[in-house]
Amino acid sequence: MSAPHDHASTAVPSHLSFDALSALLEKIFLRHGTSADVARVLAQNCAGAERDGAHSHGVFRIPGYVSTLQSGWVNGQAVPVVEDVASGFVRVDANNGFAQPALAAARELLVQKARSAGIAALAIRNSHHFAALWPDVEPFADEGLVALSVVNSMTCVVPHGADRPLFGTNPIAFAAPRADGSPIVFDLATSAIAHGDVQIAAREGERLPEGMGVDSLGQPTTDPKAILDGGALLPFGGHKGSALSMMVELLAAALTGGNFSFEFDWKNHPGAKTPWTGQLLIVIDPGKAAGQSFAERSQELVRQMHGVGLKRLPGDRRHHQRAKSQVNGIELDARTLANLRELAGE
Ligand SMILES: NC(=O)C1=CN([C@@H]2O[C@H](COP(=O)(O)OP(=O)(O)OC[C@H]3O[C@@H](n4cnc5c(N)ncnc54)[C@H](OP(=O)(O)O)[C@@H]3O)[C@@H](O)[C@H]2O)C=CC1
Ligand SMILES: O=C(O)C1=NCCCC1
Image (tube, rainbow, N blue to C red; front, top):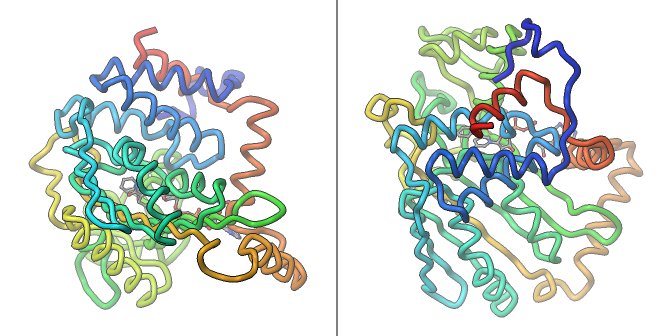
C-alpha cells in the first residue's frame, strides 16, 4: 500500500494504539458494506497482525479486503450458520462471508465440546480467509487448550514433481500452552514463501532468495514480479511441504465442504482477492490426555531446546514486536495512514 519514494512515505511515521488502529479499520469495513459484527472481528484481526509485525497480513491487506467487498464477491453482511453435528464436531456454513466471523460464531460451542469430549473439530465452509492463521489458534492456548488449524487458499503453488500450479499457499498453525510464558505458536505457509510476501517484495522492488518460485515458463526465478505475472510458487522443503499442502487441501476443503484451491477462478470475479475455500480447526483439552500437566511438559521441552542453544522459538519475534507496539504504539508510515484514513472517509 505504501509508495516507498514519495514525500508522504518518507515523513515521520505515526504510532497508533491497538484500539485506535482497530477503530480506524472498523470504520473502513463498515464503510465498505460489512455488518458491525464482521467489521469488529476483521478489524481486530488485522490490527493484531500489524501490531505483531505480521505485515503480510496486516494493513497491507486492507485494499484487498475493500476491492473484494466492492466486487460483491464476498457477503460482508453474512450471518454464519452453526450446526452442532456430533459430540466432537461442529460445522459452520460461513454463507459466503469471511472465515473469522464464522469461527467467532462457533467458538464457544467448540470449546465446550473440546472440554467435555477431550477433542473437538470445527469445519468451516463457504468462507474467505484473507488473514494470518495464528490469531485463530493462539487464543485457545491462552485458555489452556491445544489447537491446530489449516486453511486452503488460491492456486499458485506447483506440487513437487509437477509442472503447473495446483495447490494454494495453504498455511498450518498450531498453538499449545506452556507453564512460564506465552503459548508456543507457529503459523507457516506450506509454500516456500507466502503470496503476501511476494507481493510486498514486488512493491518494494526487492529480489527473493532462490528456490521460492518459477516464472511463466516454469524456470526458476528470484523476481517476485515474474512469479506474480504468470509464474508460481514452490512448496517449502520439496516433497515434504508438498505432502503437507496436499493434506491441507484434503482437511480444509474435502473434509469441510469448501472449494479446493484450484476450484476458484479469479478471472470470473474481477476485483476479488479472496478465494472461497474452507478451514478446519482441531481443539484438544490436554487435561483429558496426559496424566502430567501438559503446560509443565511443554515448558520442559522449551527449556531443553534453549539448553541446546536455541535462541528463537516460533512466535518469539511476534511477541517481541507485540510488546514493542504496546509500549510505542503500532508504527505506520505516513502514506499508509493517509490511505487508510481516506478509505475510512476521514
Ligand atoms: N489466509 C491464507 O490463506 C494464508 C495465510 N498465510 C499467512 O501468512 C503468514 C506468513 O507465513 P510464512 O511466510 O510461511 O511465515 P514465516 O516463514 O515468516 O514464519 C513461519 C513460522 O516460523 C517462525 N519462524 C520464522 N523464522 C524463524 C526462526 N528463524 N526461528 C524460529 N522460528 C521462526 C515464525 O514465528 P514468528 O511469527 O515469531 O516470526 C512463524 O511461526 C502466516 O501468518 C500465514 O497464516 C499464508 C498463506 C495463506
Ligand atoms: O499470503 C498468502 O499466501 C495468502 N494470504 C491470504 C489469501 C491467500 C494467500
